Every structure is written in C-alpha cells, then in structure tokens.
Image (tube, rainbow, N blue to C red):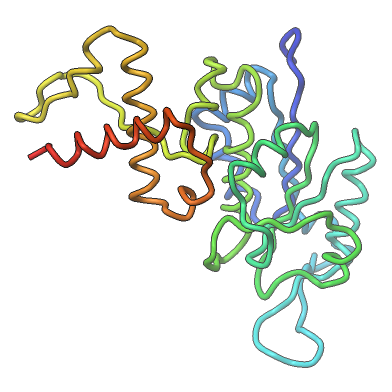
Length: 255
C-alpha cells in the first residue's frame, strides 16, 4: 500500500540469480521502505524469457575467446515486457565499463519513478543490447565482480535512502558524506569517556552554532586529508577557510 502523499519508486531488477537480491533487499531500511509502500523492488529471472527448453541465456562469443556472453533475445524480451507494465523506465546496465556511480548520480536517479537494473554476467552482455536497448551503464567501482547483482543492490540502497520518508529524518541524507562533496564530520555517542578517550567538549556544550562550526571544520579537514581529489573541487568561503585553519590547529595540538 502506498502511503498518502508518497510517490512510489519502482526498481525492476533483471538477473540470472534472483535469490542473490531478494533476501538482502528485504532487510533493514530498504525492506522497511517496501513495507511502507515507498519503494517496490521487482526481481525478474532472465531465464523465464528464454525460448528454448533448456532456458539458455548465454553462448560462446563470435570471434573466439574465453567465457560466455549473455544472449540478446531473453534480455530484450524481458526489457520490452517490463516496459509495457507501467511508466517508461530508464534501463541501466551494471557494468565495469559504465560511468562511476556517485552521490550525484544517486540524487539524479532518485527523481525517477521507475528504473530497470540489468545485471550482467560472464564476459558481458551482447553489444546489441547495450547499444540499442540500454539507456546507460553504471559501474560501482574500478574493479570486476562476478555479476551485476551487488551493483544493483548498491544502487537501490543509495537511491532509496534519498527518497522522502525512507530515512524518516529528511535532513539526514543531505548531511552525509558526498552529499556536498564533503566527507562527514566525526560522530560520537555514549559513554563520554571510553578507556580514557573522551568526546570533544564542544559536542557537550549545547551551543548549536559552535557545534555547527566545529562539524563544518572537521568535514573540511577530513576531506582534505582523506579525499584530496574531492577537496580540490571545493570552492571555500571565507568562513570555510577560517574553520579549516581552526580544525587544523586543534588537530596539531592533540596528543
């Protein structure tokens, strides 16, 4: 059931191994979002669209070479069938050759109402599928996995938590790492003193403006240390420069 005032996001996942994604996506935040009618995850077995009695979905590559290639017929049948069942979706292939997935892309996809996530396998997908039936390719990192299922789950998780109502606290997603090309500031909870390691006093002060400044400075400093590639793209304000210097000074004084 869709909650009043909520928009439904539909993920259509095409895979040869449905069990790989069904159970994990039924847990935690994504599982609760499905129960509340904020998202719907539909998992489709590509073998169901194969026409031969052995449900073949792969074959040897033309020109020779190792491994197998996913055949075009079952995939295209699946895409065309799913397209006819609702709003026109964007078709995304999870592939190591795709654009690197990041927070900006997650925000972009969160504005859609329906996506098809095609999970590649083996040596890849027949190029005719990629060229004529896929809208874009996405990679979750510069490494090779055995299939696109893990990538599809990453996309579903990252996009879903940006949708209204999924996290409950609407400001939470906007404050996290990468949402503003900054890494998130350090987080602490009870106890205040753990084996002599104390929570920074500023976080116990109750002064919300000072806490905001401290957190901003820590985010800037952490990004400069850990992700200089992100830091070089930032346009720092005069306040940012001041808070960064303060954070660096505090760091240099820590034992």
